[in-house]
Length: 465
Picture 1 (spheres, rainbow, N blue to C red):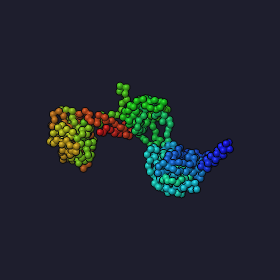
Picture 2 (cartoon, one colour; picture 1 turned 90 degrees about the vertical axis):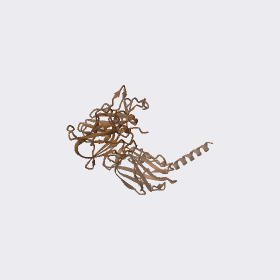
Picture 3 (cartoon, rainbow, N blue to C red; picture 1 turned 45 degrees about the vertical axis):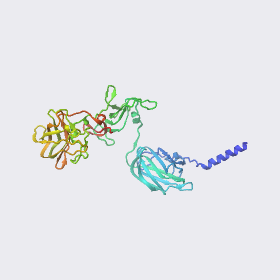
Picture 4 (tube, rainbow, N blue to C red; picture 1 turned 30 degrees about the vertical axis):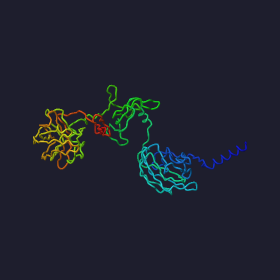
């Protein structure tokens, strides 16, 4: 019986040795990456998610590995392709990918390969398609910035080998994670996370690399506030505000140098920037494109939804509109859409006046304005030919179809065949919110520092049906 077990053990050992690959020890050759142009970039991680792999993957990405040792072999993919994923420890500009095919009796040579790149590891861009790699190649990446690279080639019943892959550094910017900053943003109370981050040099607005800075501002869109459990990073509450701010003081140590800012009301966090100036039946709606099928064109058709698309007064006491064109302009044409959400609130009659300085006015003509049709695709009601040179245009409402309030849909001005942009104010505005304006909010999408002022580019967001 002992002899039987001994023979069986020897047979198992022999079978194991015949299926395995010879273990290869890679000796350290002293190579160190120093961010120098043309150097081989170390690969942090390699994975082959869908295939059976033979060969030491850690050895394959070892920077001391000679090209002619430690190939890797692929077979039996669960998809129609073999995929090899390379990940760096940051974002690098890639000069070349140097690929050496396996040529030998242990596997077939890969003939063609496709190459994808990604900044996130989630979505990829195809950079090369079916490149011939049957012989050693240096593929030009032209300095493309990437953190993840995927090699893809067709899978079948055969076994394939790959001898060596390496990547070299191009001229450009290297972006690596700063763990100190990561920890500064890893918070368990108050401000605990956000998306849509943008950074700005408040010192002088100079955003070039290496520019002197004393304070950097951050703006964020949707922001989590409240507490997070430290032991599992789960949130105790899901409170979200729509935007917040942060400030970093250069020269001070993290995390104390980084502070976050948003107002609170009755103990609850509130957004820094609110949409109040952009919602309601304000006069500013009259010269924007919201609600028109075509903007800045008399051919545009107006919606009948008054959710931030038209102007409506609160009363009928001395109602007038003032358009500021910001500079003196030649005004040739005026187009007016009457109030279309409820045609009974439309303006019935008005007069015009013009001024170059906002103080001295020249009275123009008076006009009658037909009701809008209340359709969801309403053409303008009135076109007026003008021959005026002015910065300010005033529209005085003299009669309304309703005795309590009045309104207009849109106004367009043209001069020298060009659309004239203007800022519209009114003596009376109805700020009652209706429909989707009740859930309107602002997302902050970039900005700019000009002199001593910081300007934010907000996006007004409303829910849809």
